Image (tube, rainbow, N blue to C red; front, side, top):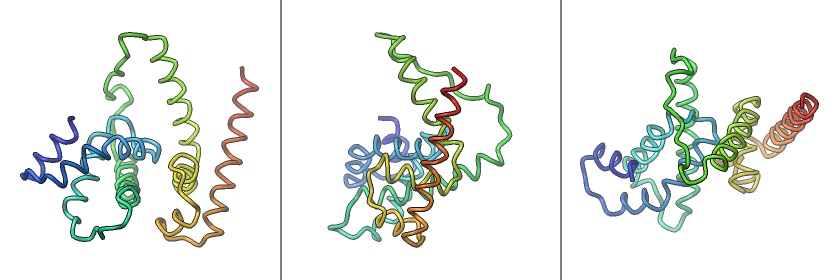
Length: 180
């Protein structure tokens, strides 16, 4: 597991607790970061950053609380920082890493990749605030109260962002189907 090796090398320790957290939650963190708008080429670095924050703030984690909720909150902050940095970056799309293809069934892998890319492109049409609420509500299945507590906005603002995101996505999907 590449993320585990990167995290342990960066911390300079062999912490069994951190190792267990990375092993158990790295796929979840990677998925959350991807849907929160972190570009594919930045996912390993962003994932590593989440776990470095976990390492630094371990004392702040209250036993008995949800590890996933804590990780999700950290991932949200890392995703925001990564997207902010992305706007300042001056790389061309050609600089992106090549796409790995499933050798056993390339057609299925390509179709799956295209569907994911289409979904990510649709999410890119949303504002950061709308995207965060939509991803946390629809993909991560959080309640609206958990979301607004995490991002620090009133409950009705959360519902408003979700409604606007759904409306934009529906319009984008309706517009896309007319082109075909």
